[in-house]
Length: 355
Image 1: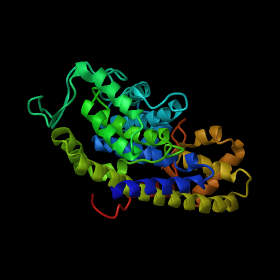
Image 2: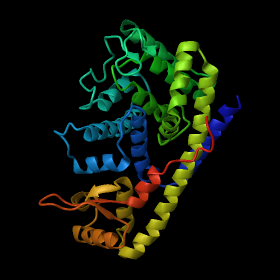
Image 3: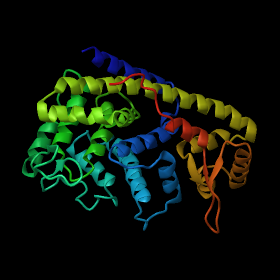
Image 4: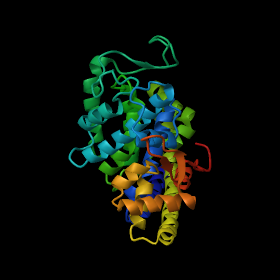
């Protein structure tokens, strides 16, 4: 299957770009946020990257149950769950235990969060249009009493030595979605597993490879592929779609990583000249990790003396690198953002063709 080789080359090229970057976790932090946005968008949320970063920076909305805040909370949880999964991989293999812990984080204090986060469901569920019943559902998932055995078999295959890890990942994703072990959050968790799997199999050193942009752009084909296997055993179409997606998303990820690196390198020279300070690069790293932030947080967390930090923000706002997203009001500090980075990360990728 030619697409297997192409998919592997796309991942290897992306990994090669990251190998030459001294701080990929800093540079690609906003990309992880955008992955959370796009994976959640497949499930129907409408938040943007700037929405969730603003909510996170403000640490607000605790009692707000409006749809916009609810959407943003779901996306933020995805981002936190991804970070948690990365940390757990240091001590645990990718496994049911790890996924259950991550699911608990994914569903904390969000819609569906009361449905036993981290626990396998005890009732039947199904996939279909709103108000569908088990009889009219598009697909009926694994019966609840069989979930434990089904997930044990899934985990044995996860840890087996398959002929090709990308084909193995494609099979695992369909299998997981067919079991649908939790009452809610299965789709997001199944996509969150992609980068964790690639690290666990040694294809990546860091879980910075995300696939949700391709899947969100080709949502109908994605669902058709899953259902084609689940209802008719059409593995060939699903594998072709999945591997093509890895290839195209890999090329897009590589282009975006290079663009972010060019932005970083260009702004590093620019900010050093603009501020004439030994703390310039430390400030730039902060802006890449937190492209939406409260001024008070920058003063406290950037590791820069406050008078210098205050001067930095004044200079960078005057010169247009940073802009005000929300003004200071009373005791509430101003909310600033780094629009050049946000716009680069949010810019849709060109996948070049259809699946």
